[in-house]
Amino acid sequence: MSWTLLLIAGLMEVGWAIGLKYTQGFTKLWPSVATLVSMVFSVILLGIAMKTLPAGTSYAVWTGIGTVGTAVLGMVLLGESTSFPKIACVLLILCGVAGLKYFD
Image (cartoon, rainbow, N blue to C red; front, side, top):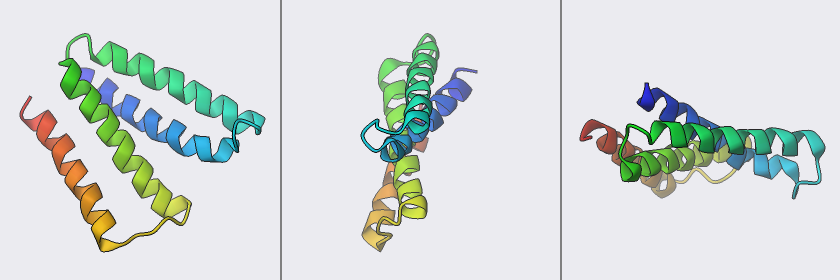
């Protein structure tokens, strides 16, 4: 259950990271509200997951999910570059996150 909560927390992190772009510096009301709600739930779920998972592993997986998800959505939704080196680096991060879970 803790790993599931951690996954959801990581996805919520992606939500708020991408949401920041749509808030336009917190000048847009509804994107700002959605982003702030996502931030709060992301951290709460991370804290709950850390009750039973190691702190270092939890935090690294949480930020890894956020990093990979934000990079991919940035490419898909925001038109960011999709160069081979950039995609390779994202895949390396994904391998590291998977390794942290596998070797826990």
